[in-house]
Image (cartoon, one colour):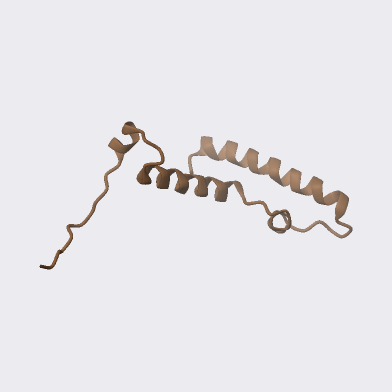
Length: 88
């Protein structure tokens, strides 16, 4: 996620959300507008990076649990499972 090309567009998308939160609260907020983080919390929004992290985790979970069946992705995964010590 630290690739400059990607970060340029991620920052643009996040700036759209910043403008949106400012616009929404401008009409209802009678005091000085709170910070972006506070505005997000007031409106129940997550940051773009939080949403991307959650989406990535859900994607990996779905691949590992069989919710997404894609042999090309599964071939790229290397999972280590230690041998089980079965007592008799």
